[in-house]
Amino acid sequence: MLKNLKFLILIISFLTLILSGTKLYAKDKILSLDDYIEQVKSDNLTVKKSKQYSKSYELLKKKAKLISAIKLYAFSEKSFAEQNQALQIFRFDKIYNQNNQIGLSQNSEYGFKTNLYYSLNNVKYQGLNPNFVSSNLAVQNSQSVPVIELSIPVWQNLFGSSTRASRDATYYENEAQKLSAKATSITELVNAEKSYWNLVGAKNSLNIQKKALNSAEKILDYVQKKEKKNLGEKSDVLQAKAMVESRKLLVKQAENFFKISARNFNKNRNINSDEIKESLEEFNFKKLQDLKTNNLKNQDRLDIKAQKAQMKSAISQAKIEEENNKPALNLYGSYRVNQVEKNRISAINNSFDNVAPSGKVGIELSMPLNLFLASDIKKGARSKASAEKTNYKQKAFQQEIDWQNLLQNIIDFKENLKLSLQVQNIQKLKLENERNLLKQGRTSTYQILVFEQEFSNAELNTQQIAQKLYELIAEQKLYNQED
Image (cartoon, rainbow, N blue to C red; front, side, top):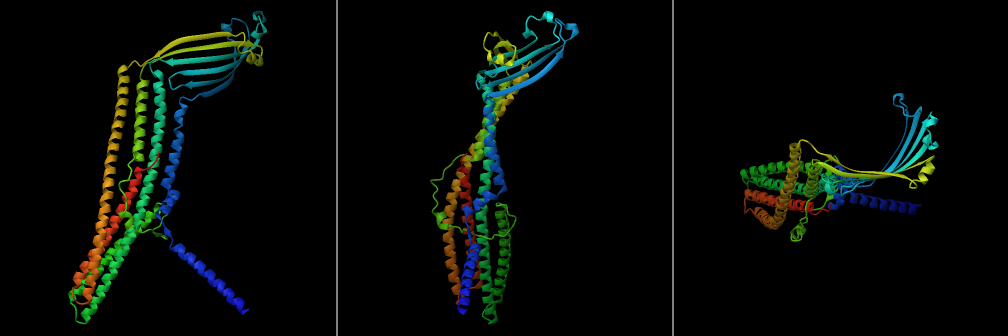
């Protein structure tokens, strides 16, 4: 029994150890940048919204194909009419009609309008005077009428210029909206990456300030002990106290900044809190120093691509306005055959047998009388397209300047980081040496305080440069995105 109890206690202890180890692991788990970005992609509402918009506009681009797509249409209607006695030619009471039609139409991208349809019409007279009836078909019949119609523009929309412009305007307008939505999403992710490194920098800065405060408190304790033994000056104590109070203020400021950074960090993953439960990556100074800058690629940002698509849409819109204000001169023609039978089945079966053909050709003209107004509209459309071209050129030029500045900043901050690390190491050696001298009574408290300040500033400067370099690397991703 005792052995079993000991064994049970051993098992419980083992399980407790495992569970406590698991909790410890969860508490100290490192949240990598990649994992954090995945959380942002999954939970950030701006990213979700932008993805939904992007997907919707990608589908809406297909509206452009509908402009020249073949369309199916059909209708069916019944009607009746009583004879007007004042206009009678032959005597009947009522006439009943049923018209059915199904057809295909298309506005081709070359401007042709084609309409191909098939009509099946039923006619029935009620109370028809038999003296005027030469055939039973006159009383009731079914008519099948296949028809083809064609219209060809010879001025407005010549060769389909307006039709293609409408297609392109629809396509590029939705393409611009899609790219703008994707640009918003990418910008949000880049800002999230900056927030990650900003929080790392805030945490490190807080630790540096706490460490500096601890050192200042140790110095204060040291000089107070010396003063009590009449081996030190009152001025050293006052200087040390001032240093401690100053460091407390800096710690408080660093704590506030850390909370703000934490809140922004959590906001990106849709969490309203200033507490961070995970540990984050640390600045990798070696990786930053080894960063290659000659392989960084410059491609158009998505917002510039969106502006280019918007420019193309504006050019197409201008073309539409220009074409719509030209005189419309169209050639048209149609050909149809008519078959009359006693019932629908016979009319359908004999649609092209012993038919009565008919046709027509013509020309139609439509033009605005106020030619000056039409001319102004066309000039306005061209001017808007020209302005969009200029706007795109200006933004493309600014993008090139932004890229050059970004690349130069990466190079400069990389060099600054190298120098800052060297300064930090020297300041650390100076401080350690001065602390040893202070213990030997060979230097002043003021000198130690100055060296403490210089070392803390060197550490903070290194952190700030590393953080800025990480942010610049994140910004570089704006220039390497696919449509």
